[in-house]
Length: 83
Image (cartoon, rainbow, N blue to C red; front, side, top):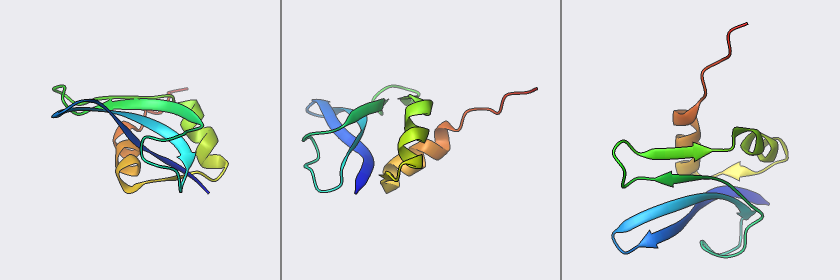
């Protein structure tokens, strides 16, 4: 089963997270299939960048986001385009 989750990078007390697609059983900072974004909680305001097309692709193909990533996805919701 695939999961969309955070992978920690950065220095001690200054975390930086990659949002990755990986096998559910792999280690937190282990092998992954694709990097679909990043999250930097040390910036003010918090910095969040997602490749929305790739995230939606993986979600359609059965990847399950973790609780934290699903909260970030809700926060990121892009504004609907006006026709």
